[in-house]
Image (cartoon, rainbow, N blue to C red; front, side, top):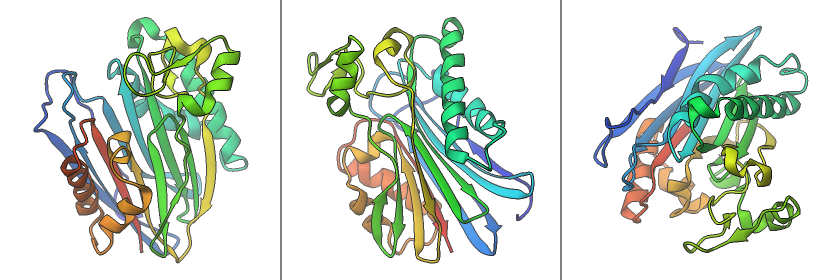
Length: 285
C-alpha cells in the first residue's frame, strides 16, 4: 500500500449544501502488483431537502490482507441513517469472524445486525432509511458486492458493462410484499411504491414500513483479472438517466477516475436528472 490508509468520506450537514455544491476526491494504492485508483464526485439534486447521499472510499489493511472498501448510501426522509451506515456498516462487516472464510455470509449477517441497530435507534436516527451498495476488494483480486435498493454497481471487462447488483423494485417483489400484508401502488405519483410510500422494496431502516420491507441484501462475487477495466458505483440519480453500457462508454479514454466520476455526474445533469447524484469510479491497471 502506498502511504497511509486513504479514507474519503462525505458528510453533508443540514443547511450546508445547495444545488450548486459538490464534493469530489480520489485515492490510489497497489494490491498484489495491480495499481488501483479511485475517484468520486457527488452533486446535490434539485430537491428542497439537504443532500442525503453519503459515500465511503477507503483502502486499508485487515490482518494479512489489503482491502478496498467502497460504498454509496442514498438516504430518504433524512440523512441520519446513511450517515450512520457510513460510519458503522464496514466495521460491522469486518468484525464478523467468518469474513475471510465466508465473505458472503459475513456481509449478510452484518447487514442484518446493522439494520436491527438502526431500528433500535429510531428515536435517535429518525424514521427514515437508506439504500446501500457496498463493494469490498480483497487483495486486488476478489470483489464482493452487496446492495439494498436501487443504488447500483457495475464492472467493465473489455469495454463491456456487467451489472453486479440488483435493483430492488417494488413491482418485482410485489408477491413477497403482499404476502407480508403490504401492497404496491403507483398512487401517489407515477412509480410503484411499497404501501404507496417507498420506491424500493429493500432498504435499511424505515421502521414504519419494515414489516413489509426487506433488509436482506443481494450479494455477488466477481474476480478481478487483467481484462477488468473499471468498477462503477452510483446512486439512482445516475441510473435513472443512463444505462450500464452508456456509463462505460462515457468514461472510455478518461484515465483519471476522479475526472471520470465527475464526467458521469455532469452527463446525468445534462440528461435532466433531478435527484442527488453520487458516483465512485475504481480503475484497475
